[in-house]
Length: 437
Image (tube, rainbow, N blue to C red; front, side):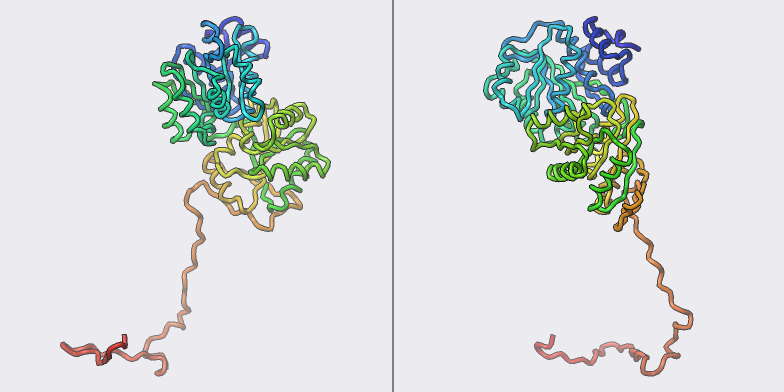
């Protein structure tokens, strides 16, 4: 099957061909026809499988057939959880809509709101937004939804996990009841799937891969190491293997900053990207990483979504995530679009529970490798795919045969006196006085 078989217009097919694509991915081949026929869609697929183009291509096709958006009006709204993902979706819309008379605008927090308000005065056929900034713009009458035709929730599971549910419900209350709804995500937990079904109506459900699985193109392993030796081990791996580009995930913002300073002190060019960084700093760090001006990009989980880096060879979990699903999203940054990738996790004894949760989620025990000179003093216990903790068997208490003596064989001083059975009506002979109990 080619893109020409999916019912897309020549101008879109031209843009696709200019990007060098001929055949749609599985998620694209299933989602695009369903969207073009006007159905609501719930689609789950691994990261790097073409989800973004799976909804931007048919969205552009449908919008090109109608009238342009009026001042401050929006015809299609795409909600994303992070600034980086909003920018990525905006780039996809611009790339595939370059030969079409469709106007798109991208808005998110962390930058001045006035230029975004100015851009919306002309209206937007497609508005890509983060929930918080969208509500800010609505409250200032900069955006209107009277003519909205389509709503897209990208990375819907992450959006709800990050606490955007109240913002999303507020936004839903502002939108016309009659609209097409699309939910795209890497994974859907059972709770999130139930919640999503309250948003979409009789959706076409698409699941091109088992939930919570990792791409086969990603080779995974863990390095057991003591916590205080992790920075030195990461430095050794970068230098020994001559890595030119590695994405490193930490659990906290302060940890990302601390690790970045350590790498730079060892002569490794690095930059941190997390929620406390300004949008300008985040954009610059990502651009420098993509252009190979820096070797290591150190990120927190909030930046895991939306980092679309071609041919990224290495991902390192400096800290294991507390939420096991985040492991799938993290390592999904490598091994994209069929390319080979390598995901390494530096695991200390304190992270045994997180490791076990991850392995049970992906239903796979990760192979372990110990680096010479970094053998952990505190061993990482063996994990299993069972939910039951492994308990060592207690040895049975045995007595030597010659230690078991009958009463008759014991010395008189070790024998306990026998109790005489009481007769009917006989008391114990003990006398209790008031206050003796």
